Length: 449
Image (cartoon, rainbow, N blue to C red; front, top):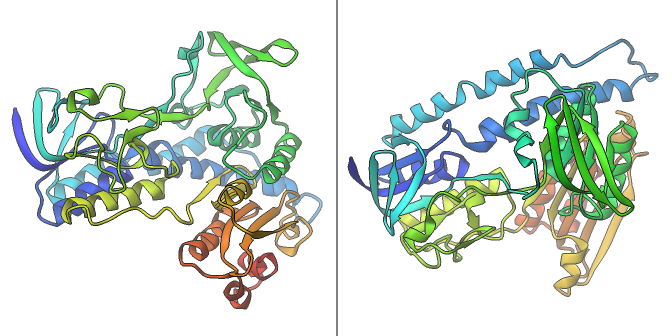
């Protein structure tokens, strides 16, 4: 069946949902398509369910840190029960999401989308014509090109495990490896992380990463750098992971092997070339308005767009809003990526906001670096957290906050304060004079800037 719409959106995550609901509310006739359960990565396969598991792991870790400091007794993670609790968040979400679209008048479709030409897509037996089409299909584990990669467990599959394997190897040293690895270790698994390069978590400050690595080692996680996985063989419960190292070849045995080597835009089967849409491995090539540089009828947002933004949920939602505004207002809006924050939900959390030292120097900026190990500060000592540090970049003369790098208790919430400061151009002097609630992490800010 052939149907025509003002806007056709591919993907029901944060970016696609923002476009569809805002355009429909403005009187446009909108369709939305997804091949998987409605709701996107964050609500179903990423941020939200992951943070439920992190919360349980934090309880275990905090209890262990506080032993001998007034806390006693046994506590453990009941993995099947934890997954059942996680499912109370994820199981209702697809239906709730689709019902919201229907209530607002967005027409919903299920199936793989494929472009037929510059202004239409095919979904099963339906052909959807659109004055504009928006690709917000999210990301998927990137192909590694190694023998046996079909044995890899994806992060979404990990989140649905009914039993936690005893030995887990993570291929790659990014967000997934450190977040899920820290969870699994607190739940009793033996965890190994294999990183092909010289250090993991390359988006983050190397000094803070080094301290997190030490903390990671202290909880029993084996992190190997310069270790390139060359093959996986076996079956669940009996895998052999072969890796090339500086000293030769090494074999790691595991009950499960998890893909943690990065994600790529999920668009291989969209047939973008049929629509004349240019793209590369980072996504659809877009201009400042998030419009395809080669097909003005097509826009992209979130992981699908090669926009220069971080692969973060708030950014996807923000870009979805920018696309909606441009569809409704003839390309009058551009994205502002200042003060983007990113957090690894390891234990403790690792955060970054704004520029790194390398980026600030590359721009020729003149700045001071304020940094300290804060494990002896009250905010870390009261919860017995030995890994607590910060590094803040402050422009000389202006007092402008260029970047903030945080490791320790509540680093995620603290990153929000610095994101606000950078995005709203709140200078160091103003932060020093702010009367924050004490004792909180934010009350440390006067000493940090």
